[in-house]
Image (cartoon, rainbow, N blue to C red; front, side):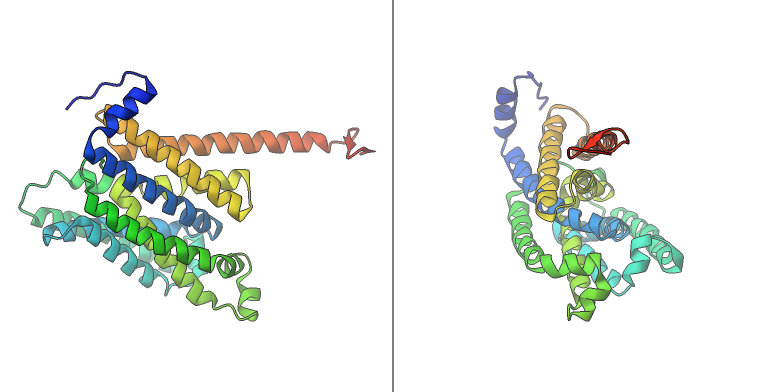
Length: 301
């Protein structure tokens, strides 16, 4: 199959969706993008990108072990990422956030060991495994209808729990001391969010691959944070950017020989650059509006 783009958007989309595996890929990618955008926005707010990176890395050996044992790789992603999230929950948040210190060095060592274990499981698998690149960088060809159902079954409770935890999680993220003084179980709420982050990382890994999870977890959320600090608007914007990057990435991956992870990462990064530039333009205009000699709200500065 060598599809050729006609640059007629409607015709190209119809041609792409004529294949059942692409329908599954679009469904799975859309589910993952929504979860990654919502959870990723909160992850950026909490400055836990280091923890997210750890979960993404651990997903690779989990998936490789599952393939070696004859189990669907998706189960391996979820078990490894959620298990790692529970372990990370034991580490003080201050250490996770700044990504420094002795404990963070230990986590970095664990990440390297996890990648090594992933390569070991791949080498132990004696069947035909063309999926090593897919496990690391993602694929659109191998997503089954069963995987779509599993992703949906994981995404719905994940989003519901994020909504339920929303207010106490925001409070615990911005002012944990005051939240704890008012009875918010900060440690429990933080652990619950890490589990949500693990679910998001596991689901995203099945589309972008373990090494490029941040394409959907960080870039859309970071781009949204550049434009607004409002939680509802920010999460919505992050989800929209994640969906746009995913759909565009799938289209380009279908009509080119390059993996979806590359395209999704490229579009997500481009969105971040555009939002950073827009933020600088807005800041510059705001600065000019309050310069001495100009009118500010009708009153001479």
